[in-house]
Image (cartoon, rainbow, N blue to C red; front, top):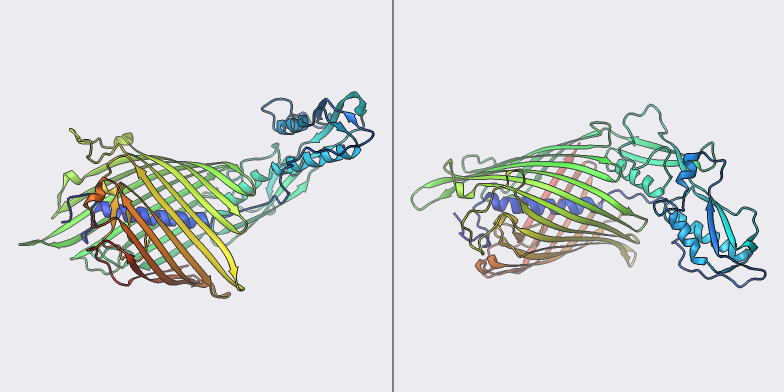
Length: 562
């Protein structure tokens, strides 16, 4: 039925553990794809904040020992409070601190204008695009410089079409009566653009009072539901190489810029007596300003006939997964975004031989994961980086380790760290457009792990060149994927070549045939109308002796969305 060692090369006999590795690799690839195509709204085009305090030598000039930012008295009390700068918690405290850097400087007319210009640039760099500075009449010989600050405030946020259904309120981290900050507006627009069936734009219109503005949102929508039918050969031979699925998506189900997806999948071979798989998944996500909440659930059942020495028996299994994710974006500007992400997940699995459960393989585990998610924009290129720490925990009845437990035995109370980085970089060479798509994933741990938590390489989602029937898995490891894509004119088709490499380490690696893989791939992908496809050939360049794989290892996926 396969090897006794959790780190050994996976056999053609399918298990819940090997399917969990396959599912996780597929999910990691999908997450990289999602981040690469996440909506980006950049409203701020102003230059960088000032980095010089130099003032010209002028005559006359006045030594300034005190700086003061005043909000006009005629503005409403609420607006005056928003423009405060005296206390550490005040929104414009940074402006007061910047002015104080000029304490003791001799300021003339040109220097005064330069200070105001620099401070205006600083305010704009913070996103306060409708906040204005002024220079009131004053006597600088007193040693005090007073500037007026009119805070830019949101009077209203509204749809351009008053009859439009749904809401903007849970997408925007701001609202009427708050300071107008372009970063808040960008976040709200991006949260609305996450909904595939709607596109949004906005205008900032001056209000009745100085500093007040209306944010007017224009929304374009198409039908909110989609059905996608797919076919690929990503399955295992033992349970069905060809896999087919149907996915239904409904956007704005609650009118709250929310996403809902439900899907089912099964083997397309339909040799039910010999082998088969069935599965399903459900996903729901809803934004709340800088926060996004989501839940994901999936199921997977399989069975296969195994030829024994004297008889044929049926090996089968089922697994269930449930994950809750909370993500908060805590910093953004025109160059980068930073988020925290917290995830809690449950997994249940059962394995059977001729309908008799193998209780020693029963799993009821829980994990918690805290991650830092970073996106960096470098010209037209985009770098995504996720650093995560995951723990096996006892929450929600997560099963304990078997006692007595030896130090080198696998544990459910593990701690592991992962890094996932991807780079998308378009460029031109001799007038031809190219895209470089790179990915790096690594896992480190000091814990002995069960197979489902180990790092696995050797399939289309990790190191290409291998058919995925036999993989390498151990406690630690990494892989790198490098792809050069060449779009074919304006046809929405592209050809690509890839070179991947990976290696695994850890106590379980001693049972492997080897620990490193290198593979190459070439393929074509694209689409016409609702049809999408990807077909490739791949070759193993470096592999352990004795590891079997198709040469070349071919693969395809095709889907149609209605």
